Image 1 (cartoon, one colour):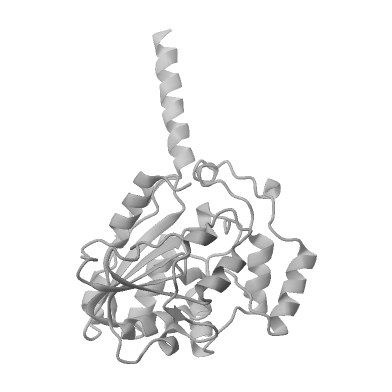
Image 2 (cartoon, rainbow, N blue to C red):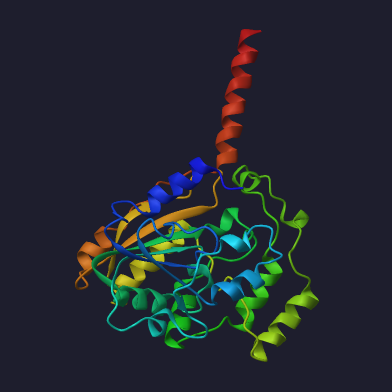
Length: 298
């Protein structure tokens, strides 16, 4: 069950500076938890399947209430987000929570969303931090990984991405990850090697398959954005950025669509993240200081 206070804080970050009652918005992959509820504002929904198919697909998923899945206005199917939208439709904001990691071509996806936004429009992203999620064992994606997908115009996960995702995904408690209590050898993997290989064969045979194609940390996202600006591959600037909060597993980015690219202002918008000592080391140091004080009093 979702904590109402946490959900409200999450929404406040995603929709910062946006008046949903007056703006035209789009949410991608909302399922049963739309950031802006139908009727609350002029909001449309996009997903890879229609609502009926999504309810069937998530019928046995304990984390999703199939009856609360929102109606889907734009069914993507095998089309990209840009191909599925009317050419004359422009949005004031787009929300995508835990979507970007599934996208086979992130750079192309960001460019398409930029074309769907009016100048000054916002792209609001919630992105899982692989260090504290079930992607804990996976490797952070490099800029080269993103460019390889972009230049090859990928529309599906690669065999490598699918196999790596299935074989590294594991049950991870975010709090234990923050406290440095994760022993990789003891984690329970989601999928056996045999099942992962079969999934790859199914992928080659043309079966639609979901995977985390790319893995992020806050720093890796900012490094990617900086490189895209240098390469002239984005016309966004970073309007707001929230680093992963202690004991949470996601960070938040709000990108603003510029009327035209301006590398100087785009790079100036990239926040500098403070270097944090691992939380378990800070707690360990705190405990050591307390013990020393207690010993002095004896």
